[in-house]
Amino acid sequence: MLIPCLTCQSRFAPDEYFAACSGYNRWLDLVSWTCPRCGNHDDMRVLPGELGFGYRHRGRFAVHDRVRVPGLRRQRGELRLDISLDRSSWRVPARLGPPVRAGEGSARRPRRAP
Image 1 (cartoon, rainbow, N blue to C red):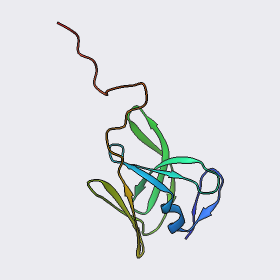
Image 2 (image 1 turned 180 degrees about the vertical axis):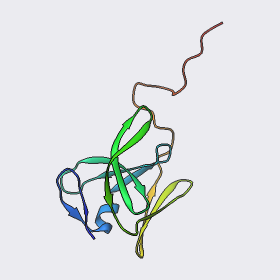
Image 3 (image 1 turned 30 degrees about the horizontal axis):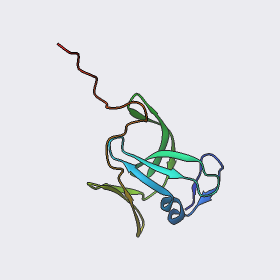
Image 4 (image 1 turned 90 degrees about the vertical axis):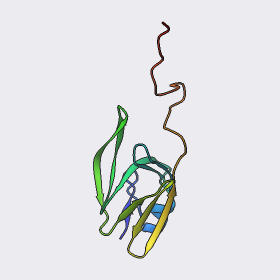
């Protein structure tokens, strides 16, 4: 089975595809992936039997494209996501800390002074 990059349409064996995963965002349940050929960066959700691609919107992730990967399984760990397919498995380490964009500061609203 070959898994495609949705940007350049290159296809990769599972070992090469999942080795390109760089981090797991536990809060949004997303895996960051960078295409080894074109350098495109995608966030995806690993689901049983498929990969879900989309975009972040208002603190959530909306899946718009799905790529079927029969036999794909996932297991959330405390500081990682374990992905398995057939007899192979890959461990994607979690990014520490909540997702905060530069310049946005804390996710909490400031309290008004009394």
